[in-house]
Image (cartoon, rainbow, N blue to C red; front, side, top):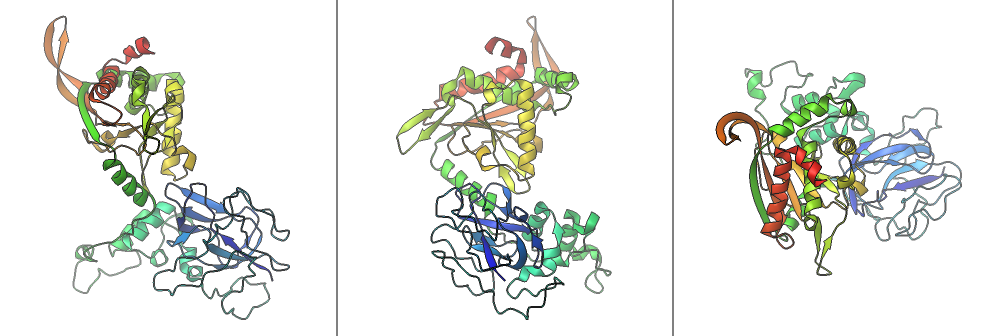
Length: 468
């Protein structure tokens, strides 16, 4: 028997820790090289991790929901043959030093960071001793149960609480997060989804005390409706993942960059007519066309006319960095929280290409599959608060950017319209825009010009032909 540990790698974001979301394997499973064995939640996205060697799973060293340090071992595999060293490339290297012949080739970025080998103790569990990584580790599991010849994969995992029902509960990551937030044990939930998958409704029913396994109405003599209100008076959720990173970024932005927000109300009837025409256009038949697409194009054109707003503040160098390309961030609400991936070079894209890029960006973000590179390098952001029926707001700048535009709800409202010197009140499509900007780089004149240009383009999209 040769036992080898698989350590948690840095998925490429310079992280120090990640939350373990879903195990894709259980004790006794046979894995091949590059099989996806675990899904972890980083500060920005969900990442599936492949294992760089083959064998039989002996032990899972972390439970779903645990926060694990990068470089800490998370799974033990029996690779067969002689004992093999743990996968541990030198700190900072992009590839593993030397692949082990018995375990197959190592993957890019896998290996322990120097001095980072301690696994965070789970709640109610005594802290475990750290494992040295300066030399190859021949792993010895905690007092093994009598090893039986291997035909039946019903091994007892001494120190792996995830090998029971919890490891076999089937649920998608957003459902697991909901269960964790509501304090629901997935192993106690009766699944109603296809293939025994736990659904959001199952978790909500379990949280309200109305799970399908209950045959009575709760406490004796009390109606079921009252039982739905039973439960703890408060709920506490650890601050980590996207929420932790977002909170820190917003605090840093709010207390570092002097924010100024300006507002404008604009008649966007012509924009809504354009959206209707594009929906019928054969060139746009395979893509979702929304007013947000026109707003994104308008902002790119406004920045082309006012390029100094496409900038960032370099505190260390005491310089303002003016960017050539517009990397347009789109704030996307996802089950994991609000994330802001960006479209590189959005200002150079024609309308159809921009529509495709926006659709792909939002879909990938909602699935939690956005790559770290898609979050980096943003220069300006749009946040669409209108989808929630909100008219306007004062958005906080995305750190490192000089401006952010809030797009409010588009409503049918009475509006004063002038034709040939005659004014009349007509029902028109109206929205509100709010532009927040960093007053260190963007003064009131520049900020006002950018906002006025966006408003002018939404009022009359044909103006783009003059500016382009």
